[in-house]
View (spheres, rainbow, N blue to C red):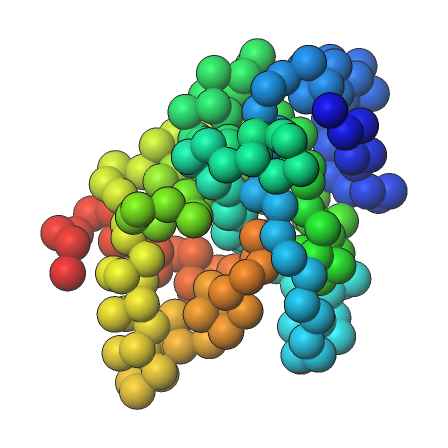
Length: 194
């Protein structure tokens, strides 16, 4: 089993005692806590500023179904996060440089959507706080297809999801969201699926 990845310097995290507890849990776990992604860097306006705290809102992807990567199961669902001690886990396994820089830019208590990816029905399933702590399940599942429909409509009308990173840099497992994007997606909980 490969050694667990070290938390990036300056990244958000709990006190040292909490971090060491989570490290030992990660080391002994059969599950790693984040999707490993292929690095395919592209220069964008987002990547130029990724060292700065662009956002207080995030979308973080993880795979809810088992898949082996170099002999390690990379499965980590929102249910796995809920099952962790104090419902807190270290988000590791991020290899893409831009996603890592976004991870470093995060601060404690910032809100993030938990997104299930690389599965039969990808979409947003819950809320968490960075570094990651379960907050609650979404009132309803918000599918990728539904978000894509709004994205297409907003591109034409100038709505809040017109430039959403989920559709402009699909492969990033850690993505910033604007306040408008976050609030709009949160409001979808109260509506019927489109």
